Amino acid sequence: MQFAAPNPASGAGHRRTRRRLPGKALAVLLLTAGLRGEETRVDFIYPAGGQVGTTVALSVAGRFSSWPMSVWTDDPGLRITAADAPGHFQAVIATNATVGPHLIRFHDGSGATSPWQFVVGDLPEQGAAPDPAEDPAPLPLPGMQNGRLRAAGEIHRWRFEVNGPLTLEFEAAATRLDSPATLGLRLLGEDGAVLGESTNQPPVDPALRCLLVKAGACELEVRPLAAGPVDLAAAPVVYRLKTTTAAPAASAALVPRGTLFESAPLPDLSSRVIIREAPDNPPEPVLHPEALSPTDGLAGSFGGFINPSGDEDRFSFVARREEIHRYRVRKVNPESEFLPVLRVQAAGEVLAESPSGLDSTLEWTAPTDGTYALVVTDARGAGGPDFAYELELASPEPRVAAMTRQHTFTLVPGGRLAVAIAISRPDVYGGVLTVTATGLPADVIAGSAILAPDADTAVLELKAADGARLFSGPFRLLVLDPLSSPPRTFPVTAPLQGRHAPPGGLLLNETDTFWLTVRRP
Image (cartoon, rainbow, N blue to C red; front, side, top):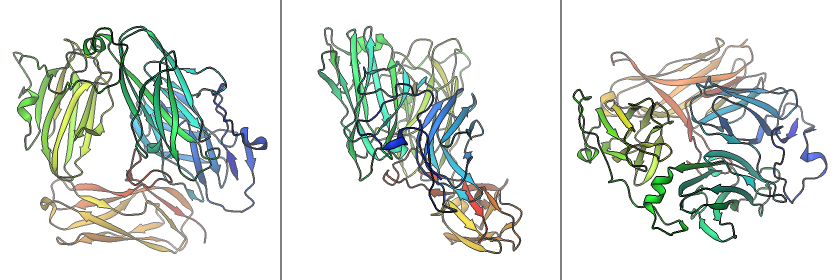
């Protein structure tokens, strides 16, 4: 069964392309594939995310082996179910869902799709993209907008007004959602003059930061820069546009008086660090970030202020490949508007970011040996004398890295398969290791692969019993160090490769949850 994605019920005013689809393809349709037992294939999901604590109507285009389909998600706070109408799903995003990118799979008894990217955000969401034949759609500030471009020359226009000095940051995710084209952003004044433009090149997603210091109306254009040999009418460019603002006072302080617009890079505020004086009973130790530039280890408790707006406290440190780092930041004054966020950076690039909130945590694994920076700041670029924080840093832990190339497996009753796993481990885990599987059905048996101290590969065999029942579900592969006390386990991962994004170009580029289908021969 093949479905063209319907417009969500909330999509009144959703943009139509000038290149029309034939016949009834603009509505909900059911096209018979004419082949029995065809595997499920998803072409796109719209929107590709939603706000925490909300329910979102999803449109999914593709070919489904049955209806209704089930949906697996990597977070118990994210639940997606099929509606009555083919191609429709509903995502219920609980208040305790983890903010950030997630993986989902569509599945039934015959198997599952590859993982798809789905983003849970903490900003208000707008689901309908503007219609080019109508006035530009309003752009709430701050907020998250969802859109889909369905023709190479199509442009979405978002209109907003500012009442005074304001710092704006725009960031669009399209390539990282595995859309078939890279987007560009352009900011226009009320008279149509170009005020600023993103400088990204495919396949990099665009970002634009600017200072507006005069009240007035502006338009933000979203347009495709380049697309592969893909029919965008059938596989549109699904994107998420994030807009954040900084306090007007910060903007006014950063631009010359009389300036209408400034799109040049902002002054470097990384050295403008204001740390509070040590209180009578401070967490131990209380250090200036400058005193940690760099240090071999970053552990302990620290305190500071984010003041003025735009301030960042940076802690430089040296990490070793595959070390696991855990950080926690907590705002001291619960009455302040401070939304602390943690970022790990290298050479100016953000490698990891925590969800913002009263109490924010981040776990990060160093990809290579090198010097990194842990940044504490406000999620909206704000600051003030009551923006105090306490930062806790756990001692880094060495990690065993294990990877296999495949994330989806199929067995038939009586069949068996071998899973090859590559292992990379630090010297502290130089002894015997074992590899095992968890979450398998009772009819599927996994042995334990034993790795000698000098081994860097393992092969784990999965075998289905002769009378194995049909099954379609997730499982995990784990590396176990039996000599540690208590025994340590490390997940085996598999790389994710999108249909359009380059290797490593997705929001999430690996998974530690595998899929097994046991079906009839």
